[in-house]
Each structure stands twice: as C-alpha cells, then as structure tokens.
Amino acid sequence: MLKILGKTTSINVRKVLWTCEEAGLDYQQEDFGIGFASTETAEFRALNPNAMVPVLIDEDFVLWESNAICRYLARKAGRNDLLPAEPKACANVEHWMDWQATEFNNAWRYVFPALARKNPDYNDPERIAAGIKEWNHCIGILEQQLQHTGAWAAGDSFTLADIVLGLSVNRWKMTPFEHPSVPAIDAWFERLNQRPAFLRHGNNGMV
Image 1 (cartoon, rainbow, N blue to C red):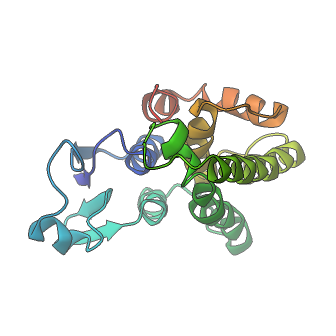
Image 2: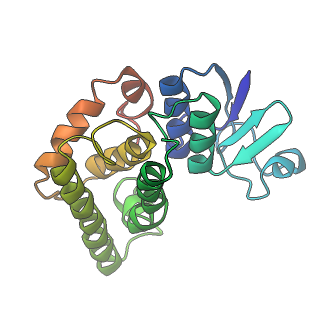
C-alpha cells in the first residue's frame, strides 16, 4: 500500500490525498510536520533532504514534491483523464500545475502568513498590499482561463490542474481581505464542491 508522510493540515499533503482518492488508490497516511512526528531527523531527511512534507513511499520508491507526487499517482493508476497520455494535452495540464507551484503560490508568501496566520513577523503594510495585488493578479489569470474553457482549468474535463489549483484558490478565498468579483472561478469552485474528495481534503475549513 502507498504510504504518505505528512500532516493533513498541510495544503500540499491535502492535494496528494485528494489525488489518491480521485485516482482510486489505497493509501496509508502518517502525520509528520510541526505538532507531529519531526521531519528534522536523519531518518526523515534520508527520505527528503528538504525535511518537508509530503513524502510518498511506494515499496522501495520514494518521491517528494507534491505536484510530482500527484503526477506519479495519476500515471500509476492509469488515469489518463487526470493526466493525459497525449503530449500536448499532458503539457496543457502540467503547465497549469507548474504555474500553480511557482507564480500562484509565490504570490501569497507574505500576505498569507500576515493575514491568515497573524504572524507578527509579517507586519509590513506595503508588502501586504503588494502581496494582495500580486495574488489577485494571479486570480485574474485563472478567471480568464475559466471564462475561456467554461468548465475546468485545462479544458473540458477535470484534471490534476484542478486539484492543485483548487487548494490554492480555497486558500485565497479564506484569507481575509477584499476579493474582486470572479464569477467564472466561483462557478468552477461550486463544481469542485460536488466532488466528495474536495470536501474532505480541499474545502474543509483548513487553509
């Protein structure tokens, strides 16, 4: 059975758990991270030298980086609907996944701990304002894409792109600041809410 190391409060662990359920893969999840088993041990660093979660263990195969894990899981399950085999369709899904991991997630690096976590170390009003502007800029890109597709992030069908972006948009929605009107995203988010795995691992009250 697949083993997933990482606490369920982690946004990156939750995308992996959601992918497992969408792909119909059985897994065992073990809590690692702050408040649980330490990732700062020699044993854990042997699995992931970054000392971060999640980590996937599949027999003698170990993998870290959440989006890479999601890709592996979809391919292991033979779920070409989640990650197409055809090169162009696959690239279309993967470029939205990569954008999520780089541009989208980097936009909230300052504003999220400031406003959602109330971390006193993140208290610069100019950086908070800049972070909100950049975060909303990324949301605008996704809004345009969903207006174009009228359905899902990468086109007409649900894919891994929707999983990784769904977690990120949930975080944006739950962080307290004034949000612009995004009707296409709101409609897409309602479609995500029809998926039981999203309600368990995405829109479940956690940010």
